[in-house]
Length: 316
Ligand code: A3D
Image (tube, rainbow, N blue to C red; front, side):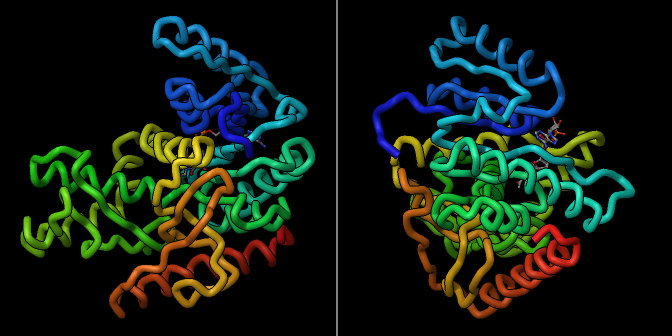
């Protein structure tokens, strides 16, 4: 990917997350956005509306809406948010089958029309869907990335800042593992302007923050009742997109393809990654405790179960 040109970003899925992704990309002037969905009129209407906000918000990038995958042609970066959130009465397996089918179909089109793109997957169940996307696309693993850790660590940053009454900008955290209850927040790597939180709050408050982070998605679902979070998820995906398109080399937790790191192989899991123009340019291996390692491996088992189910469903 060449840096300095005007980029083309495809946001596939024009629902809550996909439309917010497009909006943030325009606000940051990361590039022009192609908003894609299967619902006729939805991406076109939202894209036109966003473009018309440009003169007021001061951006000159534009969005176009489409139902035709041919319009992805030449996209530098593709963000996939298409799919269903889990609804009441739906089992994990139902979700896996439904979203697995959607991701497979989309990847066929991305492969055909945007073969050089870097792809960020947001659709749940995240770690399984990004694995499926990688297999279907056949792209080198550095060009396929899952968004989850960035969101989970942003949630933890917000909770720490709220607890201590400090600026969110001063808080840094790291969350490893799969997206969901088995994620592995790392208090030992959580700092406020370089000061470990262990020096700033008692252990029971740290434990409460870790627990709230793990359940962060569910807390919002409970409040919204008819949907799941989208502002912070979209902001997280766009932060990753920004680091890639502007070759910023930000170190962010992302679901990346592991080849032995943290003792895990042939799986996508949340790990610290350096993101630049080539996608995942490096995976950073942290020194973690035995208990954290055990949690990470437990988290990996969940993901492997999902991958096995995809195989049983004939999707892999
Ligand atoms: P929603 O607002 O329902 O939007 C999904 C959109 O996908 C809808 O507009 C659909 O019409 C569209 N769609 C369905 N099938 C296709 C297809 N084949 N091609 C193109 N578009 C299609 O959901 P949302 O935006 O709130 O969430 C989208 C996905 O992101 C869900 O799977 C969520 O669970 C997931 N999500 C993940 C995170 C993570 O942290 C990993 C956070 C938030 C949401």
